[in-house]
Every structure is written in structure tokens, then in C-alpha cells.
Length: 242
Image 1 (tube, one colour):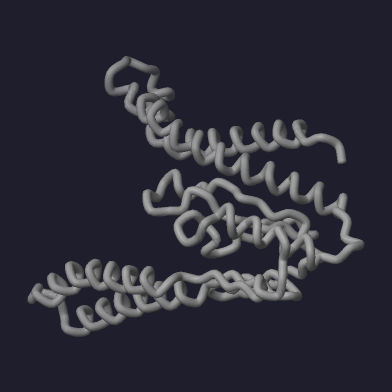
Image 2 (cartoon, rainbow, N blue to C red; image 1 turned 180 degrees about the vertical axis):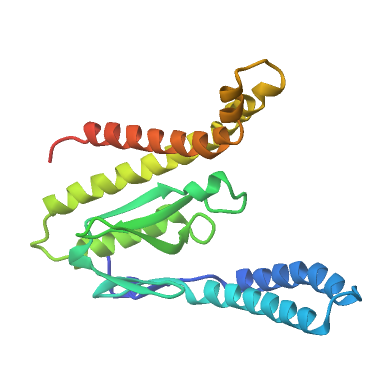
């Protein structure tokens, strides 16, 4: 793709239509909470007022945060503005641009299924807000950003071997974390059966005592840590030498 002056600057943020939808959803969610809060007579006026102010403040902050977050690409850098922090990644420091599956899509029905991320020399993963399949044509915008990067990073740009190692480790951590969380949730059912076993089977007193509540306190965290460690080590072994 040929990149000309018309391709930069580029800015990705929530659309006005989506802001209106967010405001509507926030108001619709607040009304069922506020009405009972003010109808109940046994709550002090101060408590009602404080709870109402906190709820309205929270919803206002969420809407403001959604409008503030943005991804910007100009001639010098790729810039991400978050709720509290901003991060600028010069084009010559970008090591990789990727389209990646969104882990949040597994637990949130309205979450994007794919997102776009950038990796710098420090190996850190930088999520680019609003460049996802809910807000833009991901393949088209990814190709545009990649073409901008290829042109503006400089003719003497070369991959940083040290950064590649850090990125591989970051990938391994992300994979291990996802597998660990999944294994922990899957372990809840067998752990529950173990905890309830003394109710149906005669067991020595010491085993019966250990089954509850220690099965819940130790079982899932142990599964999480063991799975995460195992997946992390295996992921690093599969990385080809740089």
C-alpha cells in the first residue's frame, strides 16, 4: 500500500453513535437502581444522596473515559491515550504490529473478537484502542498502519534481536496467563466434588477436615500456578533461536 500525506494523521476513537448508545445504556441502568433507592423510606436521606452521587459520578467517569481513550498515528509516532496515561511509540521503535484475538471476548459477549497491538523495543504489548472489529475494518486499518510504519520507520531500520527475545517472553506470559485462568475455572467442578466427598463417603477425620474448606482455598490457585508455569516453560522451548 502506498502511503501519502493523506494517510496521516489518523485518529481512532469511539464514535458519536456509540457514545449516545453508552449514555442511553448508562441512564437505563441507573434508573432501576435510583428509583428503589429513593422509594425506600428506611434509608437516611444522606445515604440516598451519597449513593446517588457515587453512581452518577461512576457512570459519568465511564462515559468520559470512553471518549478520552484514543489511538493516534502521525508522522512521528504511534500515540495511545488512555484514561490516566499516554504512551508514544516512535515509528523507528516499533518492532511489530499484530492482529490478535481478544481474551476478553471469551467472557464478554459484546467485546471485540480481535484487536490490534504494537510492540516496542522493551517488548511490551501496547493495545491500540478502538482498532478492533467493533469499530473499524480491522484488516484495512491494520494494512494502512503497517504501510505507514514501513515508510516512516526509516530506511536503516532493522529488527532488534533483544526486543525479539522480550516479545517472545511476553507472548509466553500471555499464553500462560490465559491457560492458567482457564484451567483454574475448569478445576472448580472437580474441587467442589472433592470438597463435598465427606458428605457421601466415610473418610478419616483428618481427610474430611482437609477436604473443606482447604480444597477451595488451595485447589484452584495451585492449578492456576502449575498450569501457568508449565505452559510458560513449554512456550519458551518452542521459540526458535534468534
